[in-house]
Image (cartoon, rainbow, N blue to C red; front, side, top):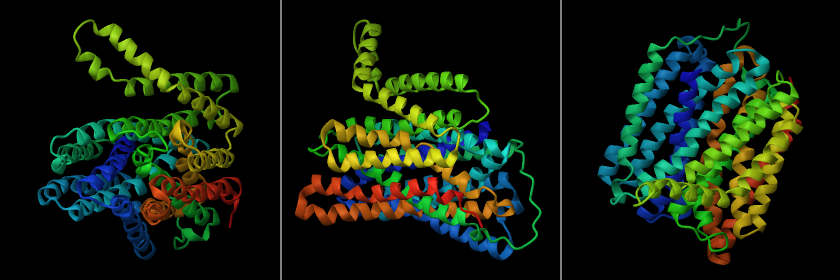
Length: 467
């Protein structure tokens, strides 16, 4: 499980670096909003193409993962991902936006293989009733990567003296790390799930919970990626906070840190084996620890250690100032715990409640301004937290030997991360001329709002449908 969680961490880190690349390349290559969001279009479009190819192969010749094994599938995915990162070197040498997009496409293909292999592996290795809890735990480490990516990636890219080559060092380093993890996976003994007896040709689409779940994945990923991609630009608006990129990256870290926090909390809240008293104490402890972690990650400690004089008092002053700035996050964590307990370990009910809160927060983004708008967009991360894992486990429940093929279909619908942000960028460009940038930005969030409305229905009703 430790090897798998390291994979979830790494692909979370790399995926959210895209949110840093969008504003960086928009300025470097002088792009429109829609053009800059081709970053997500190419990266997540690769998921669709890769998963479609996987599905077609599995329909004609049998499931590839079942033939080669989950372990080899992970190694292949890591190798392709490393190649995608390595392609950033020639792309920066050419100073070509198109070449960078090609590198992101290859990277997305590698992550497609990882998603197809790793998600069902975590879900089906172990007791079925603990699948949602296990996947939430793995996704929590994925979110640790997404929390650190804006801070580390933003520092490496936004502070580089040569913007044209700023992305090369971090991606070369990531290529080496991916190769190293592939070697570790190759040397590690991973249990292979028992193969179900195949009595007929696999046809996963016969399961209604999977069909509706595919649309749920499309909406969830599309909404989450759109919000993350436009996050820094939204906070730069005068109607919101007018923040610089270097400051806004800290709030982007809170957005993804909220997803991390919610997933750790969800792993406990959805565990039906824990008595209520122990569960409540664990949720409280995790909530406090995660709030402290988010404060420490965002406190300006680097500047403190570089000053003259006693550093200890200055460090506590920096932490206290950051805690005062982030106190709304503590309230939001408490709200997340309360909503999680209301679900009473029911995965579908939890999904519906979390999606409903997220929808209300998006409505706040549309109609509010200033700090209210800022904390509305930050808080969405907390309530996005359990959606992926719950959609996934609800969609593949009862699929039997169709599980791996169903997983590829779900990963295919990560296409939402390519299309919805791009459409939202197009809406901003379209409305910009008539209503100005601020109003256009706010109105464009109607698209994610519609996505969350569908997720409420799927959690409440769509996930219970059976053949």
